[in-house]
Length: 97
Image (cartoon, rainbow, N blue to C red; front, side, top):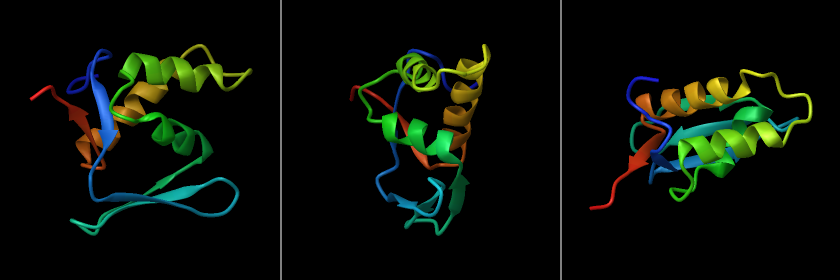
């Protein structure tokens, strides 16, 4: 991970809405930019854990523990998803300002 570290807390962007669709898939819509991104069921589960309180490390652990057959590198994949969401502006690192 380059811009996001495991100790960062990440929250959804203030103008981002999750629209759950069919078969547990969903769309993220940013009302400020008009950008849309699709999430598979695992991505939706991760998104719902981004509350600005949990760290990236805690989110990856919680997401991986929710799947009995999660691969060994699931944590890295979850962290990469979170980094991608931050890079695309759908989520943001929480700072203590």
